[in-house]
Amino acid sequence: MTQYVLIAVNQQRFLTRAFIVGVVFNIGANLLLIPRYGYAGAAVVTVLSEVSLLIPFYIAVRRHVARLPWVDLVWRQLAAAAGMGVTAALLRNTELVAALLSSLVYIGLLLALGTFRNPDIQRVLRIVPFIGRRVPAAPASE
Image (tube, rainbow, N blue to C red; front, side):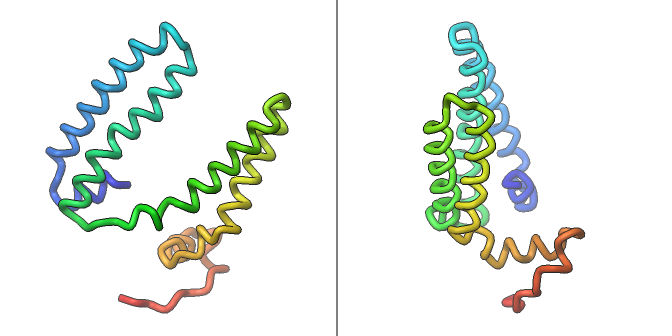
């Protein structure tokens, strides 16, 4: 989504450079970690590759679009992910149960923490065809 925002503010050249950095990082890190750690190394590289894109994207959005309240935007998801991780760790000997229960914990925590009460989420829900009719319209603030 961030790349589309940057395209909208005419930052295509920046995006190209950022993706080149991300690809070079991904290839280099995979060459280093896969031989020693296998699929686990590839998984770590995948996450770190996304972070290698997040940093320049954040800088560009901040410079060309707006400053974002990151703490307010991500704390709920991080708390839910922590609850999911703790649940999965406690049930690590039963993989299927751990996967199912930790997923339910994640979704439950997202709901309990009010992640989906944001007016922007409500706008998205209104345009999703199979849900939109059930979500009451929020007052327009534009």
